[in-house]
Length: 610
Ligand SMILES: *[C@@H]1O[C@H](CO)[C@@H](O)[C@H](O)[C@H]1NC(C)=O
Ligand SMILES: *[C@@H]1O[C@H](CO)[C@@H](O)[C@H](O)[C@H]1NC(C)=O
Ligand SMILES: *[C@@H]1O[C@H](CO)[C@@H](O)[C@H](O)[C@H]1NC(C)=O
Ligand SMILES: *[C@@H]1O[C@H](CO)[C@@H](O)[C@H](O)[C@H]1NC(C)=O
Ligand SMILES: *[C@@H]1O[C@H](CO)[C@@H](O)[C@H](O)[C@H]1NC(C)=O
Image 1 (spheres, helix red, strand yellow):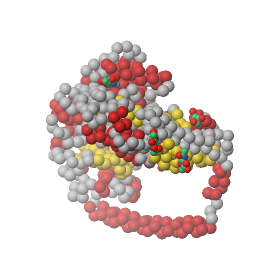
Image 2 (tube, protein in one colour):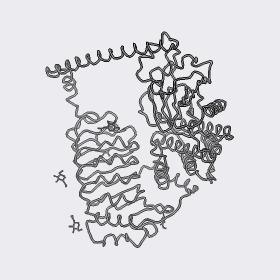
Image 3 (cartoon, rainbow, N blue to C red):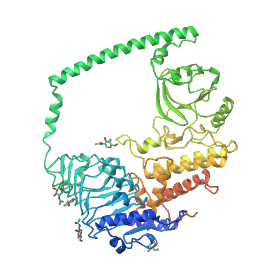
Image 4 (tube, rainbow, N blue to C red):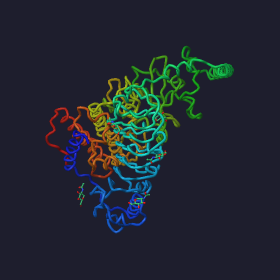
């Protein structure tokens, strides 16, 4: 372990001692104990339970309180965290399905034994695994592709075995820091990994072929040597086939050419047919329009009519648009009432859909503006109630809350229009593809986002407390980046509210906690985020705390103590649900406080008491 990591770990551990996570304690269940005893028996290749007994692994004892040899637990939760059986001379096999019945294992280290056989796909049941160290054995077969589902993995060492075949798609494991696979029989091309963020990578002494990816050159020739089929930097062997490959693709053999001409002809026929259909449709619509004597709108007409998918086309057929149902909230700068209809007829791009409704992006060419139209579903409230709610939200303005441009509300349809925010959502920024003009968010920006969103929400909660109106659907896709790259909360109050103030506001606090976790770990949240929270808690309890943080923020000049404090706030939010949980105002002030400390760079005393 590099010294800096050790130091950080030590530092964080000492901080954690000050924390006290409210976690219930319980013992390891019998069926898990039985599975583990099976596991060690298979590992030793000895079917009697002699070995298990030698290691103190018996059904009548508890792995944690009786300290089974090679097992580490989280003492407070009574959950198994690590199985470390190194250099024990075991010559059996790894029974991954028994091993992974222990649900929260983070470290499995079995290196330098004589283990044989394959690594079974069931290893992916150890969902929280961060370290898989099985180097220096006699394992064989190909690595199961399910390994790429272990998206908490940080360090994998399979070196010095007899693994063969191609590597699975490791690029799916976003936080991988180290991959050591030297001295095996692995083949195929080198998978495309995030080499920039890997600390260690070694595949020397295998049968890999092809060109070494450009980003991987930094690991040096020693990490690639001994693969006769590899070429390119940093190896001295130059790749031969680069020029020949491009020549091949240029030449079109006769057979292919005939095929291309065939397709082109077919394409032409299809286009002709479509053009005919569209012409017919436009013609019909024009007739319809004149019949119902709606004002013809000249220039934009041809544009709007062309769109096969418009909001209008998706609305309930039995609810024709009623002009009086439209309320324009920002009259001076936005759409004239007249063009609302055009807006609904303009080409609409579906941005997202969930149980609360669908979101579309619509460009209104006549005024050169782009809008987002939220079609609200399942909101069983009268037009009057909805109107009141929207007007009230509109009067409650905060710089971190996106206000609507207009809303439309008839018996069957409720639409809310927002200005389109072209800088995307926090979700996009955290989980999108990074390239030259889209850099990952650094730690300071993340802290700033956390603080602004917390304050915006706290303000709304306070102002709308009398009508019990919470956001109701807070998530990272609803936090957008404004023109100034500051966050704005969108879609406030567009959901059914439970009606009990406590629950609705608490839900927002919980969901805000999930967003904090996303900002800190860079991980995509599954379900409602509780699994992520459990994983974070389990890793934090261990010495690997620093490894829960997103690779993009660790190692910045950032202060890891502040990160841990923010992590604590996130878990506190997610632990709320109960009467004594923090309010959004309380959360906002905690974040502001730690942000000030971070800015002063003077964290001397930690105020992390409960
Ligand atoms: C857990 O408890 C055992 C004995 O009760 C102790 O030896 C061990 O050091 C404890 N582990 C941690 C991480 O506190
Ligand atoms: C494992 O080692 C034991 C002795 O340590 C030996 O009796 C046994 O045959 C070995 N098993 C295999 C599969 O090599
Ligand atoms: C490794 O596996 C290959 C087949 O893939 C086999 O021929 C070879 O004997 C194995 N080597 C060892 C040391 O087990
Ligand atoms: C591996 O996964 C990544 C991310 O999903 C994908 O872009 C890539 O095409 C995959 N590569 C292979 C060889 O399947
Ligand atoms: C990679 O592994 C080989 C073989 O064990 C070793 O000689 C080499 O030093 C390793 N490379 C690095 C960069 O550690």
